[in-house]
Length: 123
Picture (cartoon, rainbow, N blue to C red):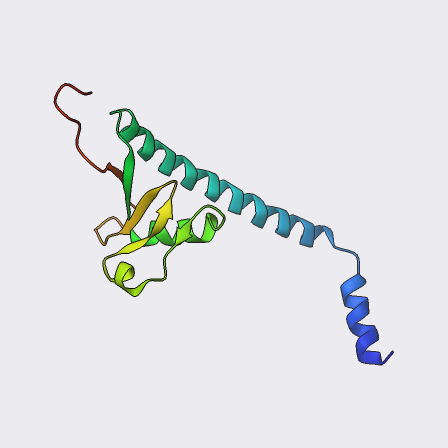
């Protein structure tokens, strides 16, 4: 084993310091809290539409909010790579709803919308 290999092995096998543990734990906790907050915001928007006995068909989001979604919800977000969709602002799907990214003054907005309005007599 060369000195360089031994040096790399020493680094890889060195005990984890308390500072490293705390930094990793803090990063993990921060990531999980952000993920839960984003999921709560989206869930609340879906619930508003579902309270009208409608299905959520679209989730309109600001660019900054979508960036957070993409980072935190990798496992449940279905992103699109189709150029024609991206040109229209369609970024993918979540829970069956199409995600549309719009530029507004509030770059962090999130708003769920139904596919159709309630029919007369429905509520």
